[in-house]
Image (tube, rainbow, N blue to C red; front, side, top):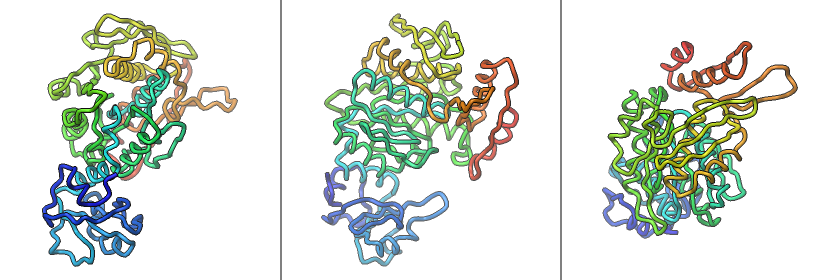
Length: 407
């Protein structure tokens, strides 16, 4: 791995404003929290949110940081260690992290999954499909990182890990001999450059509904943040294994027209709409599973059985199958077999059974759209009452609370 600052900056599209000559200084790690700095680390001072990392530079040096990257002019600081001023510290952090770990994403086929709802389910579906097909695949989700037989709790649950963590996970996958990775990608992760330098080959959008407007300010800005995933497809380097550069879009979602016009690479759509390239027909349920036929744009058809429930999970399944078949060359039958292998996903329409005489379900529905489809699915599952208990986390998008109550 490249581990001197001079080596790192020689390989990345980030220029230091000052000094123009980068010191050939050996670093042994990257930190963005001064409390987590270890001797020999590079500390990157980030600005945004509720704090300014530049305030903690002195603390980082006391902890053992041997160099600093930030956006403030060096003249404003008095330091005993080298300080590199850059235009955007988050972009710099992402590329420095990738170079430090020797650009692991360039040795992998990277499938990014974003959207308001369904990211985790779709990521798990894709992971299961590829694994069942014999592909050595890893996964980084908002819940965990799966590397071979090892599962690591990422500790986030609501957003994408920071760039050094993402690149470290990817490097571990390369070291473990994996060839593919499914990377769940949030709007925060895209907007905050956490997945910059991840060299995406396929980008999947599940849907874009009302969420995180406290952070993004408007639906248009939120949608634009999601669309950045498709910018990454264009920027990906050429890889020995090839570059699908495929955009997978939800034809049934309100974001479709915008994304259809926005995307500059090959694109395919999925959904119930007859115009979708990959669509579902003949959906039916029984108490144990749901069944439908997946119809592909080339006329191929395959029956699909899944223990997941709900019409919206048909969309998630179609998204995963489109990426696997049209992007990665699996057969429809291989994809359908992988779907059938997936059981319950924790916190996603998860049945809780402790001997009670009613059905209890836990779901991560935290947006108006997710709550609506969850309740619609519950309504289909019983002729009796549906009792819903939900809440809204603090320090989040407050505007959606009224909308969820209306749902």
